[in-house]
Image (cartoon, rainbow, N blue to C red; front, side):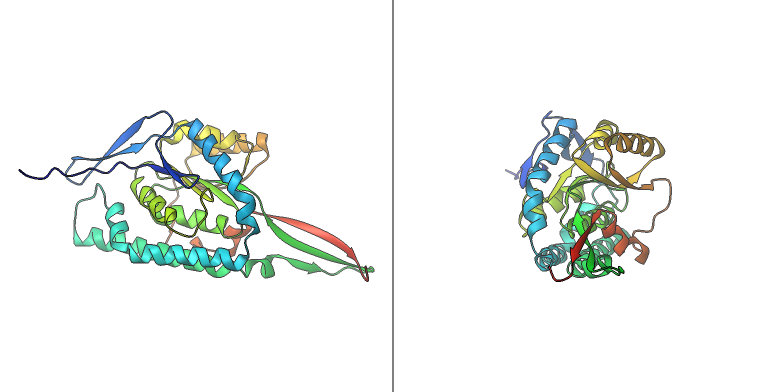
Length: 292
C-alpha cells in the first residue's frame, strides 16, 4: 500500500508560540502544478491585538539586553538561515515552476537575507556612538543625547521579495531593542511561516518578533489606529498609505512607508542603512551639572 504524504499545517508565530488564527479561517496556496499545498492562517484584527500584547510584554526584557548580546542573536539567526538555505529557497519557490533559474533566484534572495542580518548585527553595538552625542554648551554643565527604542513597531512586508523585504524591515527595528508585529507578504506568505519556525529555535526571546499572515484589507486599519504601535514601517499601496497616515496622525505614531508601486531594489546597498535603525528610535537629552 503506497504511503500517503503528510501535508504541513502552517501556523503563525506569535508570542513565542505557533498559533492558528482566532477565527480559524485559512486561505490555501498551491504548488507549481496547481495542486493544493497548504492552508495559511487568515489572521484578524484580534490576532493583531494579541500579537501587540505579546510584543509589549517582551519589550522591556529585550530592550534591557546589551547591544552586544542583541547583535549576537541576530548573527546566530543569520547562521541558522545559512544552514537551511536550500529549505528556505524551496519555501520562496512554492507556486513557481521548478527551474534552475528559479532555484538560483531563490538562493540569491536567501543569501542576501543572511547578509542583511549580519549587516544589522554589526551595527548593534555601534549605532549608539554614531547617533548619540555629547552636545557642546557654553555653560557649567554637560549635555548628552542618547537613543532609546520606541517600543512596538508594526511592519508591512512587500509582496516581493517576500523574505528579503520582510527581514530588511524587521532587523533594523529589533537590533535597537524594539519589538515587532509583522504582516507577511499577502501573495507569498510561506517564507514567513518557515522564518517563524527558525525564530522559535533561535536565541531570540519569544514575543520580540511576531509574524502574521492574512489579507491587508482586514488588518491594515487596525495597524493604523492601534495606540500601542509606536511606529509603522513597510510597503503599502496608495489606499493603504492614506489609511495608515490618517490613523497614525490620530494615534500619534511614526510612519516610514514606501510606495508599493515603486520598483524598490531590496538587493541594493541603499536597502540597508543606519537611517533604517534611526527611524525606530527616540532621542533623549539629559543636562548634567559639572562636578555633581
